[in-house]
Image (cartoon, rainbow, N blue to C red; front, side, top):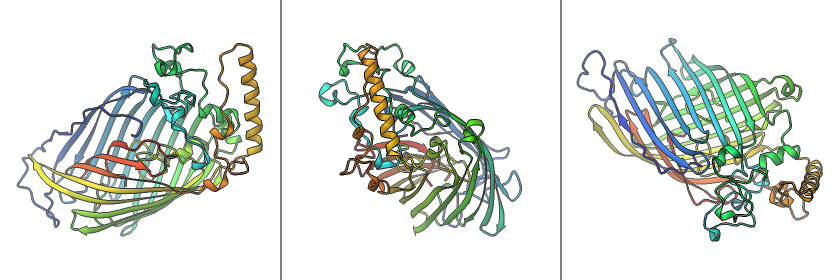
Amino acid sequence: MKRIFIFAISILFVLPISAAKKEKVQQVDSLGRKIKTGWNFGALPSVAFDADLGFQGGALANIYYYGDGSQYPEYIHSLYAEAAYTTKNYGIFRVNYDSKYLIPKHRLTLDATYQPDAMCDFYGFNGYQSIYNQSLHKWNKNPEKMDVDTYQSRAFYKYKRNLFRFAADIEGTIWKDIKWNAGVGVLGYMIDECNIDMLNGKNEFDPNIPLAEQKAMNENVEGLYEKYVKWGLIDQAEAKGGWHPYLRAGITYDSRDQRTCPTKGIYADAFFTYTAAFGEQAAAGYNHLQFNFNFRHYVPVYRDRVTFAYRIGTQNNIAGQSPFYMNTYLNTLFIQRVMYEGLGGANSLRGIMRNRILANGFAYANVELRCKVAKFDIGRQHFYIGLAPFFDLGVITQPYELDEVKIRKLYDEDCVETAAKISKGENAVMPMDFDKYFKLDEKGNIDQSKVYMPHMAAGLGLKAAMNENFVLSVDWAMALDKQDNAKWANFYIKMGYLF
Protein backbone atom coordinates (compact mmCIF):
# COMPACT_ATOMS: atom_id res chain seq x y z
CA MET A 1 0.00 0.00 0.00
CA LYS A 2 1.13 3.47 -0.88
CA ARG A 3 1.95 4.94 2.52
CA ILE A 4 4.23 2.16 3.76
CA PHE A 5 7.83 2.74 2.76
CA ILE A 6 9.05 -0.81 2.49
CA PHE A 7 12.61 -1.60 3.30
CA ALA A 8 11.54 -5.13 3.87
CA ILE A 9 12.30 -8.62 2.81
CA SER A 10 9.57 -10.28 0.78
CA ILE A 11 10.47 -13.88 0.07
CA LEU A 12 8.20 -16.10 -1.99
CA PHE A 13 8.60 -19.73 -1.03
CA VAL A 14 6.71 -22.90 -1.74
CA LEU A 15 5.87 -25.78 0.53
CA PRO A 16 4.20 -28.35 -1.72
CA ILE A 17 1.83 -30.72 0.02
CA SER A 18 1.55 -34.08 -1.65
CA ALA A 19 -1.67 -35.95 -2.10
CA ALA A 20 -2.10 -39.43 -0.73
CA LYS A 21 -0.88 -40.85 -4.01
CA LYS A 22 2.31 -39.86 -5.75
CA GLU A 23 1.78 -37.43 -8.61
CA LYS A 24 1.82 -38.93 -12.06
CA VAL A 25 3.74 -37.46 -14.98
CA GLN A 26 2.23 -34.05 -15.57
CA GLN A 27 0.15 -33.39 -18.66
CA VAL A 28 -0.31 -30.06 -20.43
CA ASP A 29 -3.43 -28.18 -21.49
CA SER A 30 -4.24 -26.73 -24.92
CA LEU A 31 -2.02 -23.70 -24.25
CA GLY A 32 0.94 -25.80 -23.23
CA ARG A 33 0.61 -25.10 -19.51
CA LYS A 34 1.54 -27.98 -17.25
CA ILE A 35 -1.51 -29.16 -15.33
CA LYS A 36 -1.35 -29.00 -11.54
CA THR A 37 -3.10 -31.61 -9.37
CA GLY A 38 -3.67 -32.19 -5.67
CA TRP A 39 -2.82 -29.72 -2.92
CA ASN A 40 -0.57 -26.68 -3.18
CA PHE A 41 0.55 -24.20 -0.55
CA GLY A 42 2.15 -20.77 -1.03
CA ALA A 43 3.28 -18.29 1.63
CA LEU A 44 4.82 -14.82 1.73
CA PRO A 45 6.45 -13.32 4.82
CA SER A 46 7.14 -9.59 4.95
CA VAL A 47 8.70 -6.96 7.19
CA ALA A 48 8.04 -3.23 6.77
CA PHE A 49 8.55 0.11 8.48
CA ASP A 50 6.66 3.40 8.52
CA ALA A 51 7.62 6.45 10.60
CA ASP A 52 4.03 6.78 11.82
CA LEU A 53 2.89 3.15 11.84
CA GLY A 54 6.07 1.58 13.22
CA PHE A 55 7.54 -1.82 12.39
CA GLN A 56 5.28 -4.32 10.66
CA GLY A 57 5.63 -8.06 10.67
CA GLY A 58 3.32 -10.70 9.36
CA ALA A 59 2.64 -13.42 6.85
CA LEU A 60 0.06 -14.56 4.36
CA ALA A 61 -0.66 -17.99 2.98
CA ASN A 62 -2.89 -19.56 0.33
CA ILE A 63 -3.87 -23.22 0.14
CA TYR A 64 -5.26 -24.52 -3.17
CA TYR A 65 -6.77 -27.85 -4.06
CA TYR A 66 -6.83 -28.81 -7.76
CA GLY A 67 -8.13 -32.38 -7.50
CA ASP A 68 -7.26 -34.41 -10.61
CA GLY A 69 -6.41 -31.22 -12.52
CA SER A 70 -9.27 -31.57 -15.01
CA GLN A 71 -10.39 -27.96 -14.37
CA TYR A 72 -6.84 -26.43 -14.08
CA PRO A 73 -5.97 -23.53 -13.82
CA GLU A 74 -9.28 -23.26 -11.92
CA TYR A 75 -9.06 -24.60 -8.39
CA ILE A 76 -11.61 -26.62 -6.46
CA HIS A 77 -10.98 -24.96 -3.11
CA SER A 78 -8.97 -21.90 -2.04
CA LEU A 79 -8.29 -20.93 1.58
CA TYR A 80 -6.43 -17.67 2.18
CA ALA A 81 -5.20 -16.32 5.51
CA GLU A 82 -3.28 -13.14 6.32
CA ALA A 83 -2.06 -11.59 9.56
CA ALA A 84 0.11 -8.51 9.88
CA TYR A 85 0.51 -5.90 12.58
CA THR A 86 2.63 -2.88 13.40
CA THR A 87 3.95 -1.47 16.64
CA LYS A 88 1.61 1.52 16.26
CA ASN A 89 -1.72 -0.15 15.64
CA TYR A 90 -2.08 -0.83 11.94
CA GLY A 91 -3.07 -4.35 11.10
CA ILE A 92 -4.64 -6.86 8.75
CA PHE A 93 -6.32 -10.00 10.06
CA ARG A 94 -8.18 -11.89 7.38
CA VAL A 95 -9.50 -15.32 6.42
CA ASN A 96 -11.09 -15.98 3.00
CA TYR A 97 -12.58 -19.13 1.47
CA ASP A 98 -13.56 -19.52 -2.19
CA SER A 99 -14.98 -22.55 -4.03
CA LYS A 100 -17.24 -23.51 -6.94
CA TYR A 101 -17.61 -27.07 -5.66
CA LEU A 102 -18.57 -26.95 -1.95
CA ILE A 103 -22.14 -26.26 -3.05
CA PRO A 104 -22.58 -28.09 -6.40
CA LYS A 105 -23.00 -25.71 -9.38
CA HIS A 106 -22.63 -22.65 -7.14
CA ARG A 107 -19.69 -20.46 -6.25
CA LEU A 108 -19.40 -19.61 -2.55
CA THR A 109 -17.08 -17.00 -1.02
CA LEU A 110 -16.75 -16.31 2.71
CA ASP A 111 -14.60 -13.52 4.14
CA ALA A 112 -13.89 -12.27 7.65
CA THR A 113 -11.55 -9.30 8.09
CA TYR A 114 -10.50 -6.96 10.88
CA GLN A 115 -8.36 -3.98 9.89
CA PRO A 116 -7.28 -1.48 12.55
CA ASP A 117 -5.80 1.66 10.98
CA ALA A 118 -4.31 4.32 13.25
CA MET A 119 -3.71 6.76 10.35
CA CYS A 120 -6.23 6.32 7.57
CA ASP A 121 -5.99 8.82 4.71
CA PHE A 122 -8.47 11.70 4.47
CA TYR A 123 -7.99 14.48 1.88
CA GLY A 124 -11.41 16.10 1.92
CA PHE A 125 -14.42 15.95 -0.39
CA ASN A 126 -14.82 16.14 -4.16
CA GLY A 127 -11.28 15.54 -5.33
CA TYR A 128 -9.65 18.67 -6.78
CA GLN A 129 -12.17 20.87 -4.98
CA SER A 130 -10.17 20.11 -1.81
CA ILE A 131 -6.62 21.43 -1.77
CA TYR A 132 -3.77 18.98 -1.14
CA ASN A 133 -0.54 20.53 0.13
CA GLN A 134 2.30 18.12 0.82
CA SER A 135 4.16 20.63 2.99
CA LEU A 136 1.34 20.50 5.57
CA HIS A 137 2.27 16.96 6.60
CA LYS A 138 5.80 16.43 5.28
CA TRP A 139 8.30 16.40 8.15
CA ASN A 140 12.03 16.25 7.48
CA LYS A 141 14.91 16.44 9.93
CA ASN A 142 16.71 18.62 7.40
CA PRO A 143 15.11 22.10 7.78
CA GLU A 144 16.15 22.97 4.20
CA LYS A 145 13.88 20.21 2.90
CA MET A 146 10.94 21.18 5.07
CA ASP A 147 8.53 24.11 4.90
CA VAL A 148 8.53 24.99 8.60
CA ASP A 149 6.21 27.96 8.03
CA THR A 150 3.50 25.74 6.52
CA TYR A 151 3.98 22.40 8.30
CA GLN A 152 1.10 21.30 10.54
CA SER A 153 1.43 17.63 11.47
CA ARG A 154 2.24 14.25 9.92
CA ALA A 155 -1.32 13.33 10.92
CA PHE A 156 -2.96 16.35 9.25
CA TYR A 157 -4.49 14.24 6.44
CA LYS A 158 -5.26 11.26 8.69
CA TYR A 159 -7.95 9.90 11.00
CA LYS A 160 -8.39 6.68 12.96
CA ARG A 161 -10.44 3.97 11.25
CA ASN A 162 -10.89 0.43 12.54
CA LEU A 163 -12.96 -1.75 10.22
CA PHE A 164 -14.60 -5.13 10.76
CA ARG A 165 -16.11 -6.92 7.75
CA PHE A 166 -17.93 -10.20 7.26
CA ALA A 167 -19.28 -11.23 3.87
CA ALA A 168 -20.97 -14.31 2.43
CA ASP A 169 -21.54 -14.30 -1.34
CA ILE A 170 -23.02 -16.95 -3.61
CA GLU A 171 -23.36 -17.29 -7.38
CA GLY A 172 -25.51 -19.61 -9.46
CA THR A 173 -26.08 -20.14 -13.17
CA ILE A 174 -29.03 -18.70 -15.08
CA TRP A 175 -27.91 -19.79 -18.54
CA LYS A 176 -24.41 -20.67 -19.75
CA ASP A 177 -22.16 -17.68 -18.87
CA ILE A 178 -24.94 -15.62 -17.28
CA LYS A 179 -25.05 -15.88 -13.48
CA TRP A 180 -27.18 -14.63 -10.62
CA ASN A 181 -25.52 -13.28 -7.48
CA ALA A 182 -26.59 -12.67 -3.90
CA GLY A 183 -24.75 -11.75 -0.74
CA VAL A 184 -25.11 -10.66 2.86
CA GLY A 185 -22.62 -9.06 5.19
CA VAL A 186 -21.86 -6.46 7.78
CA LEU A 187 -19.43 -3.54 7.87
CA GLY A 188 -18.45 -2.11 11.24
CA TYR A 189 -16.60 1.21 11.21
CA MET A 190 -15.03 2.57 14.41
CA ILE A 191 -13.81 6.11 13.67
CA ASP A 192 -12.13 8.89 15.60
CA GLU A 193 -9.40 11.49 15.35
CA CYS A 194 -5.84 10.16 15.43
CA ASN A 195 -4.46 9.19 18.82
CA ILE A 196 -1.43 11.48 18.75
CA ASP A 197 -0.16 10.33 22.17
CA MET A 198 -0.02 6.74 20.96
CA LEU A 199 1.66 7.72 17.69
CA ASN A 200 4.25 9.83 19.51
CA GLY A 201 5.16 6.97 21.83
CA LYS A 202 7.79 8.06 24.33
CA ASN A 203 8.46 11.29 22.44
CA GLU A 204 6.84 14.54 23.60
CA PHE A 205 6.24 17.70 21.61
CA ASP A 206 8.25 20.67 22.90
CA PRO A 207 7.18 24.07 21.48
CA ASN A 208 10.63 25.48 22.30
CA ILE A 209 12.38 23.05 19.92
CA PRO A 210 12.53 23.81 16.15
CA LEU A 211 10.05 21.76 14.11
CA ALA A 212 12.79 20.04 12.12
CA GLU A 213 14.18 18.65 15.39
CA GLN A 214 10.81 17.45 16.73
CA LYS A 215 10.28 13.69 16.82
CA ALA A 216 6.75 14.12 18.13
CA MET A 217 3.61 15.66 16.61
CA ASN A 218 1.82 18.60 18.22
CA GLU A 219 -1.42 17.22 19.67
CA ASN A 220 -2.97 20.70 19.57
CA VAL A 221 -2.93 20.77 15.76
CA GLU A 222 -6.31 19.67 14.43
CA GLY A 223 -6.29 17.48 11.35
CA LEU A 224 -8.53 17.91 8.31
CA TYR A 225 -11.00 15.28 9.60
CA GLU A 226 -11.44 17.26 12.85
CA LYS A 227 -11.98 20.48 10.88
CA TYR A 228 -14.61 18.80 8.69
CA VAL A 229 -16.48 17.72 11.82
CA LYS A 230 -16.26 21.24 13.33
CA TRP A 231 -17.45 22.90 10.13
CA GLY A 232 -20.42 20.56 9.64
CA LEU A 233 -19.09 18.86 6.50
CA ILE A 234 -19.06 15.59 8.46
CA ASP A 235 -22.28 15.21 10.43
CA GLN A 236 -22.17 14.24 14.09
CA ALA A 237 -24.22 11.12 13.27
CA GLU A 238 -21.44 9.80 11.01
CA ALA A 239 -18.37 11.25 12.72
CA LYS A 240 -17.65 8.19 14.90
CA GLY A 241 -18.64 5.47 12.43
CA GLY A 242 -21.31 2.81 12.79
CA TRP A 243 -22.42 -0.75 12.07
CA HIS A 244 -24.07 -1.50 8.74
CA PRO A 245 -25.55 -4.85 7.67
CA TYR A 246 -26.18 -5.09 3.94
CA LEU A 247 -27.95 -7.16 1.29
CA ARG A 248 -26.65 -7.45 -2.26
CA ALA A 249 -28.10 -8.87 -5.48
CA GLY A 250 -27.18 -8.72 -9.14
CA ILE A 251 -26.25 -10.54 -12.32
CA THR A 252 -22.94 -11.29 -14.01
CA TYR A 253 -21.70 -12.40 -17.38
CA ASP A 254 -18.44 -14.32 -17.21
CA SER A 255 -16.71 -15.88 -20.21
CA ARG A 256 -13.15 -15.65 -18.82
CA ASP A 257 -10.89 -18.66 -19.25
CA GLN A 258 -9.76 -18.33 -15.59
CA ARG A 259 -10.29 -16.04 -12.62
CA THR A 260 -6.83 -15.04 -11.38
CA CYS A 261 -5.14 -14.05 -14.65
CA PRO A 262 -7.56 -14.33 -17.57
CA THR A 263 -6.07 -14.43 -21.05
CA LYS A 264 -9.38 -14.03 -22.88
CA GLY A 265 -13.05 -13.37 -22.23
CA ILE A 266 -15.38 -10.82 -20.67
CA TYR A 267 -16.55 -10.28 -17.13
CA ALA A 268 -19.41 -7.85 -16.48
CA ASP A 269 -21.65 -7.32 -13.48
CA ALA A 270 -24.48 -5.06 -12.40
CA PHE A 271 -25.79 -5.14 -8.85
CA PHE A 272 -27.59 -3.28 -6.09
CA THR A 273 -26.48 -3.03 -2.45
CA TYR A 274 -28.90 -2.00 0.28
CA THR A 275 -27.08 -0.93 3.45
CA ALA A 276 -28.91 -0.38 6.73
CA ALA A 277 -28.15 1.97 9.62
CA PHE A 278 -29.35 2.11 13.22
CA GLY A 279 -30.46 4.66 15.80
CA GLU A 280 -29.22 8.20 15.20
CA GLN A 281 -27.78 7.22 11.82
CA ALA A 282 -31.10 5.77 10.65
CA ALA A 283 -32.86 8.98 11.74
CA ALA A 284 -30.29 10.99 9.77
CA GLY A 285 -31.14 9.04 6.59
CA TYR A 286 -28.09 6.79 6.32
CA ASN A 287 -30.07 3.76 5.13
CA HIS A 288 -29.10 3.80 1.48
CA LEU A 289 -29.15 1.95 -1.85
CA GLN A 290 -26.19 1.92 -4.23
CA PHE A 291 -25.80 0.70 -7.80
CA ASN A 292 -22.58 -0.70 -9.25
CA PHE A 293 -21.63 -1.59 -12.80
CA ASN A 294 -18.34 -3.20 -13.77
CA PHE A 295 -17.05 -4.32 -17.18
CA ARG A 296 -13.75 -6.12 -17.78
CA HIS A 297 -12.41 -7.30 -21.13
CA TYR A 298 -9.38 -9.54 -21.71
CA VAL A 299 -8.09 -9.56 -25.27
CA PRO A 300 -5.44 -12.15 -26.24
CA VAL A 301 -2.61 -10.58 -28.21
CA TYR A 302 -0.24 -13.57 -28.36
CA ARG A 303 -1.46 -16.90 -26.98
CA ASP A 304 -1.45 -16.71 -23.16
CA ARG A 305 1.79 -14.70 -23.17
CA VAL A 306 0.45 -11.21 -23.94
CA THR A 307 -3.01 -9.97 -22.94
CA PHE A 308 -4.59 -6.54 -23.28
CA ALA A 309 -6.90 -6.05 -20.30
CA TYR A 310 -9.13 -3.15 -19.32
CA ARG A 311 -11.81 -2.41 -16.74
CA ILE A 312 -14.44 0.32 -16.49
CA GLY A 313 -16.88 0.74 -13.64
CA THR A 314 -19.05 3.07 -11.60
CA GLN A 315 -20.65 3.27 -8.16
CA ASN A 316 -23.50 5.66 -7.34
CA ASN A 317 -26.11 6.32 -4.65
CA ILE A 318 -29.65 5.98 -5.98
CA ALA A 319 -31.56 6.33 -2.69
CA GLY A 320 -30.75 7.58 0.79
CA GLN A 321 -27.42 8.96 1.94
CA SER A 322 -24.21 7.05 2.55
CA PRO A 323 -21.93 8.15 5.44
CA PHE A 324 -18.63 9.61 4.30
CA TYR A 325 -16.57 6.63 5.45
CA MET A 326 -18.61 4.21 3.31
CA ASN A 327 -17.94 6.32 0.23
CA THR A 328 -14.32 5.18 0.55
CA TYR A 329 -15.48 1.57 0.03
CA LEU A 330 -15.82 0.09 -3.46
CA ASN A 331 -18.61 -2.49 -3.47
CA THR A 332 -17.86 -5.86 -5.03
CA LEU A 333 -19.77 -9.10 -5.56
CA PHE A 334 -16.91 -11.29 -4.31
CA ILE A 335 -14.29 -10.36 -1.69
CA GLN A 336 -10.90 -11.24 -3.18
CA ARG A 337 -8.58 -8.79 -1.42
CA VAL A 338 -8.25 -7.22 2.00
CA MET A 339 -9.69 -3.82 1.07
CA TYR A 340 -11.57 -2.21 -1.80
CA GLU A 341 -10.77 1.49 -1.62
CA GLY A 342 -12.48 3.91 -3.93
CA LEU A 343 -10.97 5.96 -5.38
CA GLY A 344 -7.20 6.20 -5.02
CA GLY A 345 -4.60 3.72 -3.87
CA ALA A 346 -3.38 0.21 -4.61
CA ASN A 347 -6.86 -1.27 -5.14
CA SER A 348 -8.33 1.30 -7.52
CA LEU A 349 -6.10 4.11 -8.86
CA ARG A 350 -2.45 3.23 -8.36
CA GLY A 351 -0.12 6.20 -7.88
CA ILE A 352 -2.95 8.40 -6.60
CA MET A 353 -3.20 8.85 -2.84
CA ARG A 354 -5.57 6.49 -1.04
CA ASN A 355 -9.11 7.92 -0.79
CA ARG A 356 -8.09 11.07 -2.68
CA ILE A 357 -11.37 11.11 -4.65
CA LEU A 358 -14.09 11.05 -2.00
CA ALA A 359 -17.63 11.63 -3.28
CA ASN A 360 -21.12 10.10 -3.30
CA GLY A 361 -20.58 8.57 -6.74
CA PHE A 362 -17.66 7.93 -9.07
CA ALA A 363 -16.47 6.14 -12.19
CA TYR A 364 -13.09 4.62 -12.99
CA ALA A 365 -11.04 2.88 -15.68
CA ASN A 366 -7.90 0.72 -15.61
CA VAL A 367 -5.91 -0.41 -18.65
CA GLU A 368 -3.07 -2.97 -18.60
CA LEU A 369 -0.86 -4.80 -21.11
CA ARG A 370 0.02 -8.06 -19.35
CA CYS A 371 3.11 -9.84 -20.61
CA LYS A 372 4.48 -13.14 -19.31
CA VAL A 373 8.16 -12.71 -20.09
CA ALA A 374 9.53 -15.93 -18.57
CA LYS A 375 8.16 -19.35 -17.56
CA PHE A 376 10.00 -21.99 -15.56
CA ASP A 377 9.56 -24.84 -13.09
CA ILE A 378 11.06 -25.36 -9.65
CA GLY A 379 10.43 -28.94 -8.63
CA ARG A 380 6.80 -29.65 -9.48
CA GLN A 381 5.76 -25.99 -9.16
CA HIS A 382 5.11 -23.87 -12.26
CA PHE A 383 6.21 -20.22 -12.22
CA TYR A 384 6.11 -17.23 -14.53
CA ILE A 385 7.49 -13.69 -14.36
CA GLY A 386 5.38 -10.96 -15.92
CA LEU A 387 5.42 -7.25 -16.70
CA ALA A 388 2.32 -5.07 -17.00
CA PRO A 389 2.42 -1.37 -17.94
CA PHE A 390 -0.83 0.31 -16.92
CA PHE A 391 -2.92 3.50 -16.93
CA ASP A 392 -5.60 4.35 -14.33
CA LEU A 393 -8.29 7.06 -14.38
CA GLY A 394 -11.09 8.15 -12.04
CA VAL A 395 -13.84 10.82 -12.16
CA ILE A 396 -16.58 12.02 -9.81
CA THR A 397 -20.18 11.44 -10.92
CA GLN A 398 -22.03 12.47 -7.74
CA PRO A 399 -20.22 15.20 -5.79
CA TYR A 400 -20.99 16.35 -2.27
CA GLU A 401 -23.12 19.50 -2.25
CA LEU A 402 -21.11 21.94 -0.13
CA ASP A 403 -23.07 24.66 1.69
CA GLU A 404 -20.41 27.37 1.44
CA VAL A 405 -22.35 29.91 3.55
CA LYS A 406 -22.64 27.43 6.42
CA ILE A 407 -19.02 26.27 6.07
CA ARG A 408 -17.64 29.82 6.15
CA LYS A 409 -19.82 30.72 9.15
CA LEU A 410 -18.53 27.74 11.16
CA TYR A 411 -14.98 28.39 9.93
CA ASP A 412 -15.17 31.99 11.21
CA GLU A 413 -16.54 30.78 14.57
CA ASP A 414 -13.65 28.29 14.78
CA CYS A 415 -11.15 31.11 14.21
CA VAL A 416 -12.76 33.32 16.89
CA GLU A 417 -12.89 30.50 19.46
CA THR A 418 -9.28 29.48 18.80
CA ALA A 419 -8.05 33.08 19.05
CA ALA A 420 -9.84 33.40 22.40
CA LYS A 421 -8.12 30.27 23.70
CA ILE A 422 -4.73 31.58 22.63
CA SER A 423 -5.37 34.95 24.31
CA LYS A 424 -6.08 33.06 27.57
CA GLY A 425 -2.75 31.27 27.30
CA GLU A 426 -4.27 27.92 26.31
CA ASN A 427 -2.50 25.64 23.89
CA ALA A 428 -4.25 26.00 20.54
CA VAL A 429 -3.33 26.43 16.87
CA MET A 430 -5.18 28.86 14.60
CA PRO A 431 -6.90 27.45 11.49
CA MET A 432 -5.14 28.21 8.23
CA ASP A 433 -6.60 30.58 5.65
CA PHE A 434 -9.78 29.27 4.01
CA ASP A 435 -8.06 28.85 0.63
CA LYS A 436 -5.61 26.37 2.18
CA TYR A 437 -8.53 23.94 2.58
CA PHE A 438 -10.61 24.55 -0.56
CA LYS A 439 -9.83 25.45 -4.16
CA LEU A 440 -11.34 28.89 -4.82
CA ASP A 441 -12.36 30.46 -8.14
CA GLU A 442 -11.62 33.99 -9.33
CA LYS A 443 -14.54 35.34 -7.26
CA GLY A 444 -13.25 33.76 -4.07
CA ASN A 445 -15.90 31.03 -3.96
CA ILE A 446 -15.29 27.29 -3.75
CA ASP A 447 -14.46 26.31 -7.33
CA GLN A 448 -17.20 24.15 -8.86
CA SER A 449 -15.30 23.63 -12.13
CA LYS A 450 -12.74 21.30 -10.50
CA VAL A 451 -15.25 18.67 -9.37
CA TYR A 452 -15.50 16.65 -12.58
CA MET A 453 -11.88 16.85 -13.70
CA PRO A 454 -10.33 13.38 -14.24
CA HIS A 455 -7.64 12.01 -11.93
CA MET A 456 -4.99 10.03 -13.82
CA ALA A 457 -1.93 7.88 -13.09
CA ALA A 458 0.39 5.49 -14.93
CA GLY A 459 2.95 2.87 -14.00
CA LEU A 460 4.48 -0.56 -14.42
CA GLY A 461 3.75 -3.83 -12.62
CA LEU A 462 6.03 -6.79 -11.96
CA LYS A 463 4.33 -10.16 -11.37
CA ALA A 464 5.74 -13.38 -9.93
CA ALA A 465 3.22 -16.24 -10.13
CA MET A 466 3.13 -19.85 -8.99
CA ASN A 467 0.72 -22.33 -10.59
CA GLU A 468 -1.26 -19.49 -12.25
CA ASN A 469 -3.15 -18.55 -9.06
CA PHE A 470 -0.62 -17.49 -6.40
CA VAL A 471 0.54 -14.10 -7.75
CA LEU A 472 2.86 -11.60 -6.06
CA SER A 473 2.48 -8.11 -7.54
CA VAL A 474 4.94 -5.25 -7.22
CA ASP A 475 3.56 -2.10 -8.88
CA TRP A 476 5.30 1.21 -9.46
CA ALA A 477 2.99 4.14 -10.25
CA MET A 478 2.92 7.92 -10.37
CA ALA A 479 0.06 10.42 -10.47
CA LEU A 480 -0.08 12.77 -13.44
CA ASP A 481 -1.13 15.73 -11.26
CA LYS A 482 0.69 16.77 -8.08
CA GLN A 483 -2.67 17.48 -6.44
CA ASP A 484 -3.15 13.69 -6.46
CA ASN A 485 0.31 12.89 -5.13
CA ALA A 486 3.36 15.11 -4.86
CA LYS A 487 5.70 12.13 -4.74
CA TRP A 488 7.27 11.17 -8.04
CA ALA A 489 6.44 7.48 -7.52
CA ASN A 490 4.72 4.97 -5.27
CA PHE A 491 5.38 1.28 -4.81
CA TYR A 492 2.77 -1.33 -3.90
CA ILE A 493 3.34 -4.92 -2.88
CA LYS A 494 0.19 -7.03 -2.86
CA MET A 495 -1.29 -10.34 -3.93
CA GLY A 496 -3.02 -10.90 -7.27
CA TYR A 497 -3.88 -8.66 -10.19
CA LEU A 498 -5.94 -5.50 -9.74
CA PHE A 499 -8.75 -7.02 -11.82
